[in-house]
Length: 156
Image 1 (spheres, rainbow, N blue to C red):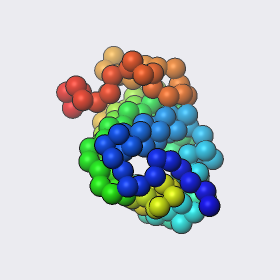
Image 2: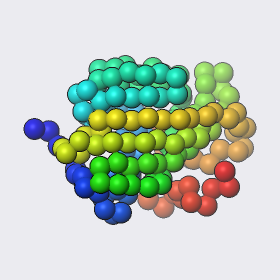
Image 3: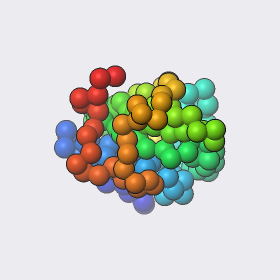
Image 4: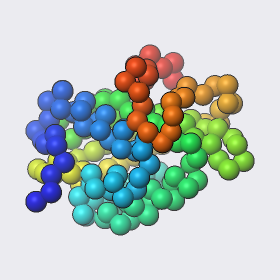
């Protein structure tokens, strides 16, 4: 049986580790690797899209990162329970015309006993920003450097 530690039940420390691992994986923008953190039958709601299964997740992520160029994401633990984690996040990206956006969102995650996410529900809003208003400048793709600020002191 495949597992993705840390496993539930979560503590504050293991929930933070799970959130940072998800952030790092998404910042690497590899749909095949990211999809492996989800159960085979994982259910997703992302904005207006609802779908299920790893292949649908891979397909979604390919479409997403083909559109959302130079994507950089920061996630933050909001709350956790035995096998659930809630996060808030922001990410920045630009379209093929060069317009930058900051996306603001919340996700609710539910994990199976093997630590694979079996449910992900995301609510996300995009706001156009100027290049000068960007906050996330590390080399991409790749994880956020450990000394780059998170969201706690973000004004939005």
